[in-house]
Image (cartoon, rainbow, N blue to C red; front, side, top):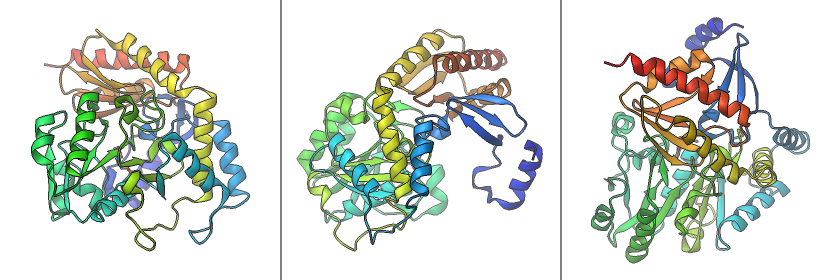
Length: 392
Ligand SMILES: Cc1ncc(COP(=O)(O)O)c(C=O)c1O
């Protein structure tokens, strides 16, 4: 079926929540994908920071294929080796006090954290202006983007939003009534805005002083993307709750809400659950992702990707600033022509995304080769120059 035929069928059968996608993709190999008309693209978006191992990585394919052919689903009435292995690894990668609730998405990881926060006996939550934590009602309640939440009001009451990187706002808004503070180490959907290490350390300290839980949402930053397994590690802190999804499954749906210390035990038997959470296939995928991150040194690779992108785009006409870390970078443009760059790049054979009208978000697969990276960067520069020139 051609791209045009697929687009027509989509509109006739799929709810319009995303608008009609511009692309019909049928195949992928590492950081290259092909559309229904046979055209190839370099993928700098990786399914929005999900395909950490690129497309069709042989170890991921093998792990998932073997698992589905062996034991596909158990429900939470039985455990299985893949979930045990993954849980143990996440404990080893974080802290011995960690206890994990497995789910299927970032929003669900956030929902679990909202419920844990309620078990402190407090209800006040603090989050950041511009933050994004998911589309379910609890996650949306701590999302600082009114355009996304306003059609669904009233959401959870008692949520305060403060500006990122403002320590005095943290001090003013967190009290001994606050249940939890919600932070993304780099606000992804909000425009690739990094929180400083000093800010994260101050947040840790103020949470300790007030007894509020520090919830770090690493749905986008986690799993090697910023050059460490988790972005909070750059600041030398440990959250009370860590949220993961996206890159953890490398394309299979898996999320995790990881509690540490007292937050590890606030939810008790019967208080939370989900049918597919921790299923064997998703856990096998996540175990393969963690294996490949080690084998292919993908934490280091994330830093090399950052360097290559910075070297290529710094000083480019139309580029004002490059922010972010590792393989999660925001290219701040000199004006609001991000959507034009995205469509020009697509015509030229590159998939990217504009998190804000003036900010491109680059989150390529961590396995991207040097050649894919340089081809993609050449296309991106051409697209920026083409669209920048036509700015008033
Ligand atoms: C930081 C963050 N948290 C939560 C979510 C929601 O994840 P999901 O779309 O898997 O529900 C996202 C998705 O973009 C995200 O970037």
